[in-house]
Structures are given as structure tokens and as C-alpha cells.
Length: 359
Image 1: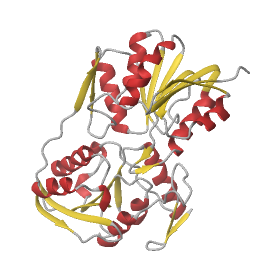
Image 2: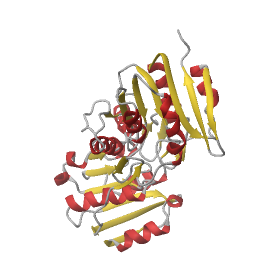
Image 3: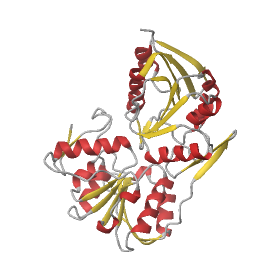
Image 4: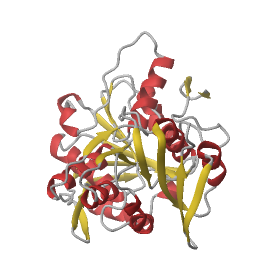
């Protein structure tokens, strides 16, 4: 637990990250908590660890990430155990827009996702509703600032404080965002803005795709499914396999579900952190794990994926993982699975084939 002196809150990251690696708030959160009216009904978007939710008690949260939803709940309960708070919304249709007096957005890594959120605000809020964007200055390209200034009637950029930048926008003129997509062989894949590698085949996925042919039976989980490419490829090649696709990102699961319908492939898609939404025992897990949490390069999310997979696999269960070669996964995988083969290596990626020891 970490103490945030400006707000007198005690917060923690979810999943846990040591304090010397990452804190549950940053200077951009501090900027928003200082500059906004903390008593006004606030729509909070992209609040990774619930720092803003704890700062603005009259709020609604729009959370894409299942991890962010859990972090928000944990930190609200730790700081305000006697209070009851509205659940976070995973979809804009669940927001009561009539109550909102101001919007606080932590600027994401993906600019198309920011445009997507702003367009929803534009369509649902009065023109004079102030929208505040905050992020670390080094993560906000000048091209983004120029685009926002061009597409807003009123645009104000505050001076940088503690390496964070705050923007104030009103009278938005954001063009309607468009889904992106591509084809991989006979699969047609589309994605809502914000889905990882939604407009092109990710190079890690390209590397692991040929090795999916070893999967020939059982219940298979595409863990961290994104647009559903790996799970749909397995189902297409092995129709008798039961395929479950799950992702921390809500928009990713909605895209995967839509792609399953488009390609007429019967897979089950679920939203949740790691395997929280999957209760079945699994014969196979395939995974192209993230190594970024927002702008931070971290391994804790991937490690949690490996640990939960090991616990959920059957006695003959197996796991296929593609990972950037520089990431230190080998030791942890060997501890968990005992039998770990590197079946592919190049200058960027390793594909691991992990097997549960027979009990």
C-alpha cells in the first residue's frame, strides 16, 4: 500500500507491483485532482488503479480493463469501507450522461482509443461540458496536440507540472472513428479502436500461428485474445476443439465476438483478468502476453497469466507462448511447468511449449 499525500489516500496496484517499480498514481493524476472540481459529478475514463475514482467521490467510471475495475473496487473499499459506489461501466451505454458536469481522461497509449472516447463524449454531452485530458508530457506527441487543437472549438494547454501535461477541451468536432481490420488467410478480422494490433497482423502472432497445428483436441483457451485471431485460427483448423477466448480489455472481447460471428466460427468469448472468467479445466492455453501496462514495461501481468494457466491445466495440459526474446520468462516457466521447450527462436521472439508434469 502506498500513501498519496496530496489526497491523503492509501492506494495499491492491481495486480501487485512493488513500489520501486510502479506507483498506483502519477503526476497526471495529481494534476487532475488539483485542477478539477472534486465535488462535481465527474466521468472518469482510463483510471488504471482507481486513483481518480478515490479522488472524486461523485463520479462514474468508464473502464475497459478488468484489472482496472478490480483495482478501483479494492482502493475504494480500502479508503471508504462504509460507502457504496456505482459499478464501473464497460460500455458507454451504461453511463448516465445527464448527470455529468466534467470529464477526466488519462491519456492512453493508443491515440485512436482517445478519439473513440472523445467522440462518445461529443455525442452525449452538452457542448460546454469541460473535458480534461492529462498524461505525462513525454507520452503525448506534438502531432496529437496539434490534432486536438484543430478539432476543438476551445482548447487550452496548461504549463507542464512535474513532467505532466493537462489539456482542457470544449466544443468538440471529433470525426466518427472507424473500426480497423485486416485479413489473415481466409479469416476476416475487425477491431474497435483501442484493440491491440487491430489494423494489422501482430508480428508475435505471426510467429506463433504455424505452431498452433499441434493442438488437435480438448478445451483450448486463447488467453489475452485481442481480436480473437489465435482462437479463431484454432477453431477453423480443428472444429471439434472447444475454444474459449478471454481478454482483460472489454473492447477486445467485443471485437473477438464480432469476428467469430463474421467468420461463422463457434468460440466462447469472455471478459476478465487472466483466467478469472474461465472456470473450465483446460487442455491447452495459447498466449501472446502483453508486456506493457499502459506506458510502463512490466512483466507482472504475463507472469500472472502463466501461473493461473498452470493451475487450470489438466494433468496432461500444455501451453504455447510467444514472447519477446529479451523478456525474462524462462526461469518462471521452468519453475511452473518443469518441461519447457523453446521450439522457435529468432532475433525478436521465442515460442515456448510448456507441459504439465503427469501427476
